[in-house]
Image 1 (cartoon, rainbow, N blue to C red):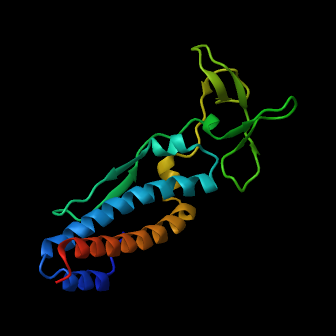
Image 2 (cartoon, helix red, strand yellow):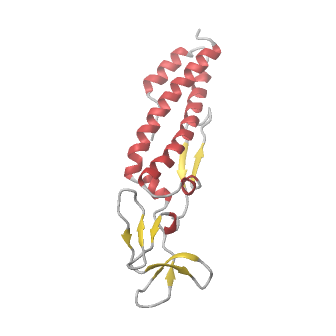
Image 3 (cartoon, one colour):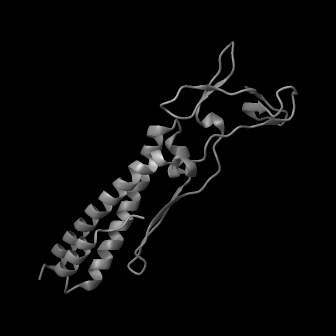
Length: 184
């Protein structure tokens, strides 16, 4: 959970003592602006670690905005795991099909994986459930965006960014309101 520094809240209350509602309005605005910035940072951070497009990431992210009555905001990611073809799939004339999900790893051979057309018309990567039989087939998927978002390698970058941005935005919003309403 990311929060505004308590010292900054007390300082804002002192500066805006004639307009106490403006402190909560400043906090709500800061939370909402931070949520938008963090959503962008989530996409960048995931793409730094995984080979997936921004479109596939942003389609799963949503923001719950804060208000003066409810000073909480939330960024959530809901969605199914993307097909393995959303990542890097390499086919070779000889040898198995290789898949690379993480940027800093090498492509891994996936047993039974091949590129083809199914009886139902799907064209793409498929995998045999039993390597000794032709059917049944399954369509493999990679890790879901919520899994990538919650991964330690992603959160270790996103959480400090969110904390820093929230406190900067709160100070900016207080300064804005101080100038707008006069620092009396």
